[in-house]
Image (cartoon, rainbow, N blue to C red; front, side, top):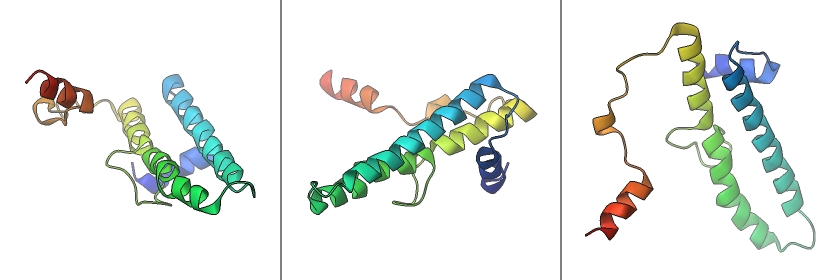
Length: 119
């Protein structure tokens, strides 16, 4: 499925036919709404504009990008939106068994940290 097609499903609020996927999409919308609220709160006149700019340029931008927006920093390696599209495709076309090669999967930061500590 193309990103634009999936964005249309998200914008129209259509159900996908999968309760788990629908719940994940709903949670994404809640997080996006929270990001908007946080952005508005940061514009409070009592907040130093440089602090607001720092928040908007760093952590708020990272959260937004991880969800699938390229509004701030162009996107993250794998966004929540891309994950939702993959789930949607699996639900409607069946999983692509064998496409995930665990031997080349990136390790989590926890795995890297534990390995460094054990040296």
